[in-house]
Image (cartoon, rainbow, N blue to C red; front, side, top):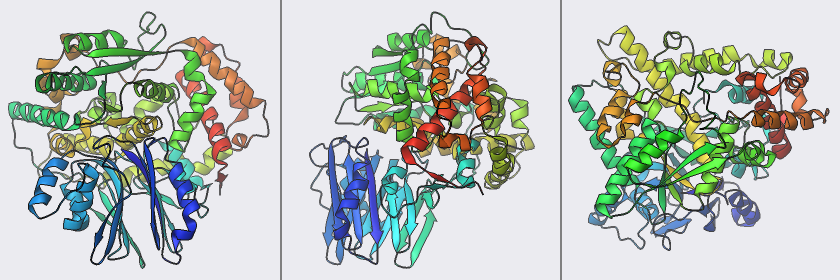
Amino acid sequence: MCGITGWVSYDRNLVSERTAVEAMTETMSCRGPDDAGTWIDGPAALGHRRLAIIDLPGGRQPMSVETPDGTVAMVYSGETYNYTELRRELTDRGHRFTTDSDTEVVLRAYLEWGPALAERLNGMYAFAIWDGRSQQLVMIRDRMGIKPFYYAETSDGVLFGSEPKAILANPLARREVTLDGLRELFALIKTPGHAVWEGMREVEPGTVVTVGRNGLRTHVYWELETRPHTDGKDETIAHVRELMDDIVRRQLVSDVPRCTLLSGGLDSSAMTALAARQLRESTGETVRSFAVDFVGQTENFVPDELRGTPDTPFVHDVARESATEHQDIVLSSDELADPEVRSRVIRARDIPMGLGDMDASLYLLFKAIRQHSTVALSGESADEVFGGYKQFFDEEARKGGTFPWLVQFSNTFGEDDSILSNSVTRALDLPGYIRDNYASAVSQVQRLEGESDFEYRMRVICHLHLTRFVRVLLDRKDRASMAVGLEVRVPFCDHRLVEYVYNTPWSLKSFDGREKSLLREATADVLPRSVYERVKSPYPSTQDPKYHTKLQENVRDLLAKPSHQVFDLVNRDWLERAVKVDTPQIAQAGRRGLERALDLALWMDMYSPSITLS
């Protein structure tokens, strides 16, 4: 797990640009606190910051191999979970290895199979290979988009990096955001390839991007495909369990301390229980688990439409039954509302696209975990894979016309653009942007022959969550964790599991009328009864009125700066009214509006973006 960056410029020798390359590399220092390296050869420059996970002494990067026809060099971020099998196959084909790292396996796999190696990888990865034999740069991203990867074309090549900040550190990059970028900030749909910053794009999940002297071309090596599902209920449940056992076993491999993220929900509880059993039986180790909580939350919890129960009692049931070495990370409202914490979250994400206290608590949770572990397994993405969200069962969200989560989000928090000035709202035309993106997303869904209208509609909803919504959460997870040098693995994003469950009919996914029926039954034997019976509860949010009060104080400080650039976008009158409302009366929509305004202001202070509203 690392941070990568680079520059290809066919019209110059980048040896003279080492200072710029090192500046780009340095922006990735949080992602890779253990080591740094650069490699420059003529028109190509690669930069790497390393978080050492496997083969601590042998996995240094950039890594290169000399061939009779030229040098092949690589920078790699992520983990390849089937690298031992690939290493054996490559050894049988005559390759000789000098390290025990998965990085060298991926590099030599490229020498053997070229860009087609991507189809053989199981893992989360983003890597770039400069092929001196053909004078081409090859960029490859994992199937689900777990690891971020950005690039920006230049007049004679390309800039790239794990995060936009690496690209923005180059003097050729533009710090410009147009209306289309602002639309993406407020739409909550994660349009594939969109990077918010003008002139910048993402390497899309499951895609190879090749850059040569004649330009850039892309090849999609993986996408969600519709296939018939022929297994019955029992066979389906058994296969899900078989896959989960194999996935967790692979993702527990590490040469550094590892742990699990435990929320007391079905996803993290099942993953933690499987990990605890496997480690206990294979090595006798005890799994460490961590959970986030807030001061006074459990004792003073008030059920609402999103969360019916506090997490902590269920967390402790799992920790006790699976015999984990458990620790609650308990956060105060002062910590959650701290402007410095908010600043670090914005810096980690490069854009103000956060979720307020839920982003702050995730960052602080990861920061606390990093004092004990370097690798964590997460239950992220199980809701998208198995159908766990409320909108999967809500008739209004099911009927179509827009992204299902936007229906639930609007009902709970109000419209996300409510804090914007009227002129900006009109210019953005978010309904039109979302409508066009929705039509484009639905057009990519393949209908199974003979599939009923209802089953097809549920297939569409599943597809939208797996190709749009999950990427919002995966990006959030990656940025918050890597900002503190913590690698978070996501077993539920294994492409074999995603493909299998995606093609399972909704009637099987919800055979007992509940959310995530297949996962619940597949792991029933390792779950406490309390968790087995628990209703889905989203990632926790603080209920402490002190947090609202702190937000209002921070916004008052912002209002004291009437010339701030944020007021070119934000409705100042709305903010002034919001800070006068008694704290207990602040609705979720009002709280989120305060958080949004603060995020926008901090982002502008950090990045000084040029914003074009025409």
